[in-house]
Image 1 (cartoon, rainbow, N blue to C red):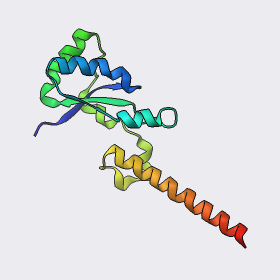
Image 2: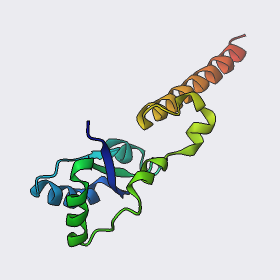
Image 3: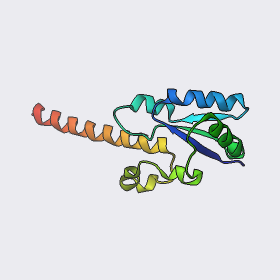
Length: 128
């Protein structure tokens, strides 16, 4: 089974559309990871931006197309996945092997539970 590799990161998903169109016109299927998360969380949390991913078998041709198009090439494709929010691994070591989106959802769930407990205790103090 072929692996998926990340070839570019963009702060805004709209910036990735031209490269995606260029790759697709050359027959390379690509996917933009964290597109919606980046749009929704922009300004609130750094989720690492939108990541353009392709199949590993298409990597040499995609890098050639990127170079011809004037795009910045990734330094080392094997190290790109190691750049994640490391704070999540500190607080949730049991989620280390889970996908990035699952880790973010767990953080939001934990925050929601904490807020709900605080509101519950505050309301119980004032109800007496």
